[in-house]
Length: 307
Image 1 (cartoon, rainbow, N blue to C red):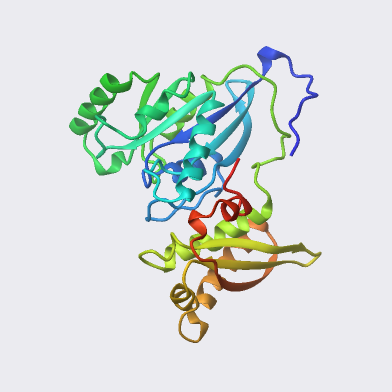
Image 2 (spheres, rainbow, N blue to C red):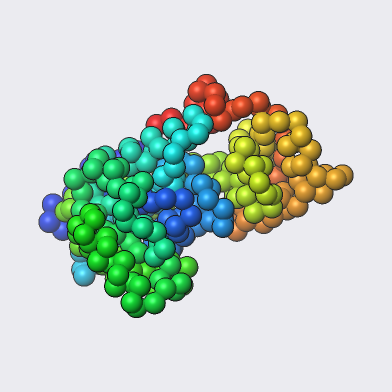
């Protein structure tokens, strides 16, 4: 994907920049990015650690008569690494902070500011930090006031904006706060580009989302989806997906009795793919055992976990 370097737009007539969304797992980062971009870019489930990559969503528009290009990065939730996979995930987080023009630090009302895991990472950026206090629908005015004061004291952000990403509450206020902090700069990408990820990446994410929604315990976390074939024809897209698990017993669980579970996730994924790609999809799935893939550097590299 090439950057748009030849652009006649004068410096003061266009805003463009990178906005990094950071926070602990399950605070609503992916929901927020999807709301801000207006497209489903990131997996949203009730389980933590569903986002594993840095996913960019590109939004073009006009704000107060000035055109803009806003490049969001949804990053994995900040975790204490237990596998090499987690190390790679945290590399994506750190990388997104280093090139950010604005940082959205998403926290939820119930989180304490003191000793918060994300605070040391914020030292990696010189960009303005907007603290996004999410899930206000689960709070009251008194608690919000207390939390705002607590965070103000802890990190002195450029702004604190309480929202509900789920209910789309106060998102416009947040959007205004982001745009007005973007630098004046020509656009980085062509206007019709929506993301920096290829189509097969989203195909794999859709299958992976169905695994997170349909299985419990360790299965979603020890599985990976690789798209080994993505062929676009006039009338349909032919996709071959390989679902990798770490143990033979997990393979049996993924497939289910008489293949019922695999058929279910395949049917759900195909429907979402057809909505996403706007075309009929033929989806073929295979389940393979790849022992301890989360701890093998060569496998993580193969699956795209290194920037």
